[in-house]
Length: 170
Image 1 (spheres, rainbow, N blue to C red):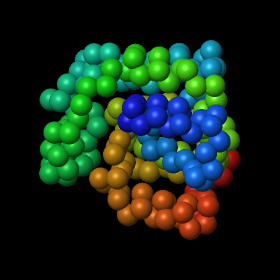
Image 2: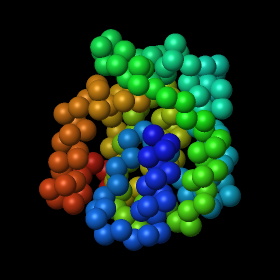
Image 3: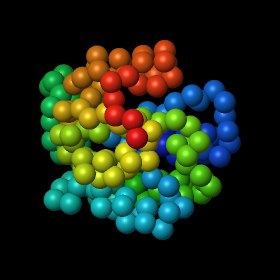
């Protein structure tokens, strides 16, 4: 996720690409790293009681409980098998080189995952304040596994109407 976020910030944020009509953040980091408070917020979002994270690298043994606790065993096993190390500190430093976040100029929706164990729901609510729309889901970190129809309908609404339907507008 961090690599994709860095790519989006590098290639969308500030460049004004017209092909991107709407951004969707699903239990994701949505911060402006130019803001002096951003680093404090980012550090506060990491699980505080979890010992399986070392500089953002998740122990595969603990990943099931952190990311996939509400997924089927088959989905969780497949997902854990695809995890790769992504040290957070290096990624945050690369992300900090972009002048403005993409969500500053592109409409956005933030999906808050209320049962997330990887990214605190309270922190998600704080970040979601920057989004134009918010949607609360009773799911863990990966609603595309546990609520695929909801996620698909959200994306369909955005692609059809240019905005999500049945979600809170800011």
